[in-house]
Image (cartoon, rainbow, N blue to C red):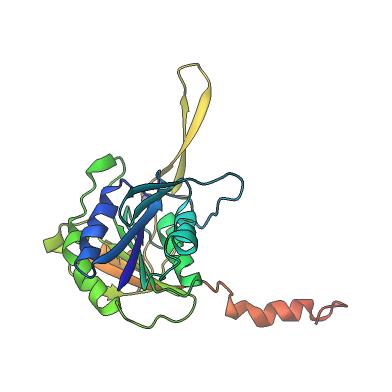
Length: 260
Ligand code: MN
């Protein structure tokens, strides 16, 4: 089994090293193609306005000076053209990718790119307890449980245009209660805080922070699972069409000339 690993925290991130450790227990054909620098929050963006560089760090180990999507495209279109990967694993992200996070997340978007290419893809993220933990975020829950989470997913036939999003809770591995297959949740809006500071030359600059979520997690959601110290496993689809609105929207346009 040929496995491609990528992430959005960058090629040097501890979560990627851990993912490589885990992947090597599953296969001896593990490739790493990851962004050279951190790309958290890059979403599914694709670099079109500047050239990309490819840096070889070792055998089957590369960095791309772009986004997570760029990294997957580079892997599939340039580095792994002889044989495509059978599986793409993205992460393990430093921080949760729950609810609406998935639309901002480079980690999840790299898996989306895999799904678009028709390759089974899994995004993995480790939640942490509070802001400001820097490089001290523990990956213990992910380290201990990743094997058990991945085992049923590997070799599973994923429907076209779908991927699996896995989040590990912010607790010690021994405190993890189990694994839940659950829905994508949604937080109340307003979590982002704009932090305004002054630079050494007296000019203002701004930095987005993510404050604590203010929500009552919906039942059976990823948010609820993580809050209760369960691992959340959520199937996601790239087709964002809202089926519920199709009929009413058609009705609103029905009377207009030229609308079929
Ligand atoms: Mn990240």
